[in-house]
Length: 428
Image 1 (cartoon, rainbow, N blue to C red):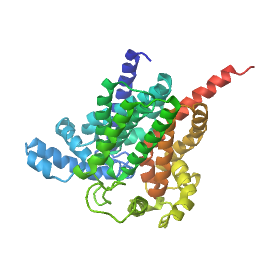
Image 2 (image 1 turned 135 degrees about the vertical axis):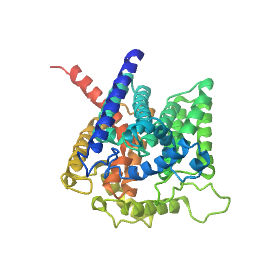
Image 3 (image 1 turned 135 degrees about the horizontal axis):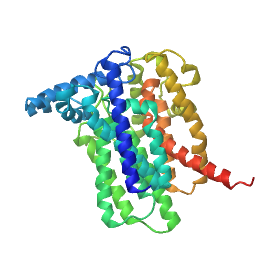
Image 4 (image 1 turned 60 degrees about the vertical axis):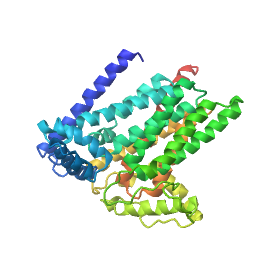
């Protein structure tokens, strides 16, 4: 894709998102769907935490408008609300404290996600794959709708995709020294942003770094050359990941369990719990939190708990089933907390993902020597299975799964292109 055409497509995507946000706001403002959106355009069911975030952001914005920066700092607030508070000052002072006021920042997140998807696709495969995957993500209904809300998901996805892009470049071959510092800073900053935004999924960062280390080892064996620059960048990112938790507070959903890293570096005292025991405690703790999630009619296996390694191994197939395929077909037409229409939309999207998994598998097979692909695939698969262990509520699962679905969609687009190419080459 030419640079000019990419800019044009980004402008089209921006206009599309602004119009979508305006449409959602008008539906809420005129009470066309009073059980789905409030007068500020905030989802009452699918993004109910946005109601709390709107109140917090409004309080922050009021402090800024008075010039009371001390109060702004003292208000207990998630990091993404502090960012949204600047947008609430302006244009919020004109249009009110609603999703229209948040749109300048929401739009930046949306375009950043599309850009990162394109860059990932270009880095792993080619520009055509990256562009088409970005188009699919841009029109994905539930992701588009959630991107208009005041939740922290969009910012967390941007942070995770940014870190993934850096790590993908590390396993792709030797990098130049003059690029190393910028990559290390970007990777460390992305990890830090993910911690402050969604620290309760911090364990995933350790898995991401572990896969990168493994694939770098394979690269060294394959090339019979040690890429010192790559190892240096990875070491700096790992150092940042270990340094961040004890020195920076993570944002959490108020009233939920606090975020805890897999490796506790916040204290110099000796802990008797092994990493495995800490992981089991995290799984059980997070799962209990989601069992209290609004809309427990959508919960799956609410009574499941994990006390031993055997419990985890026995539940592994079920966790994979939940992470990859929930909500299941029987749930697609139930009313639930979010209403029947939302369930139908979720069912349609899940069915599409069922179909996408086929070309994604084709892509993995045909590109099996591509180490960059394996980093994305292993991380996406691990993330989906991990969510199957931790998230007991389908509604919460849907939102948390977007970043991993994005990776799977990227693989599916490439697999589809491969299948089409093979079909054209086959003799008539």
